Amino acid sequence: MSNSVLILNGPNLNMLGTREPEHYGQDTLSQIEDRCRKLGAELGWEIDFRQSNNEGELVTWVQEATHVHQAIILNAGAYTHTSIAIHDALKASGVSVIEVHLSNIFQREEFRHTSYISGLADGVICGFGGVGYELALRTLAVKK
Image (cartoon, rainbow, N blue to C red; front, side, top):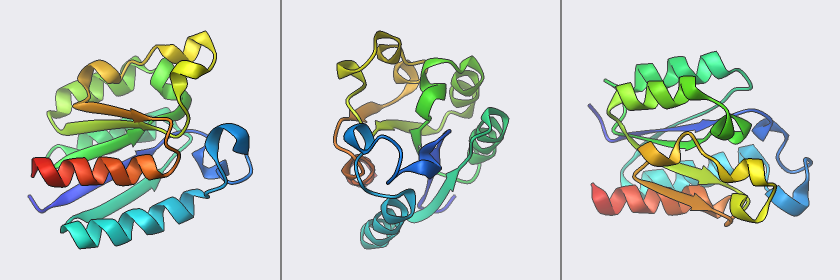
């Protein structure tokens, strides 16, 4: 297994930069990806960066990560609060997980305070915008 990190992004994150910038900031997903690839190279990580609006596709990618990636950085978007399927896939994978959210989910609507991922994650980073992904990569580098 290589020094590889799978960075998964859930529904609507392809709309970053235009969707509710007061919550999610001005960064596009492409800009976040570029910064992750640059930092990953500096830290010795190969970055596999993906986005899907489809829950089943995210589940499949988590399942495939088991024998390929050392860690997953996951921003499951709205699936954070609803997806037992993603929870079960993460649990079965045995891969280290860091949960990331651009906004501080605890300052938002009550339904966003529940995460099906947090209990399985090694850590949760929320409220720092796109920098949260970089914080997750730095955390993984320290744990390496």
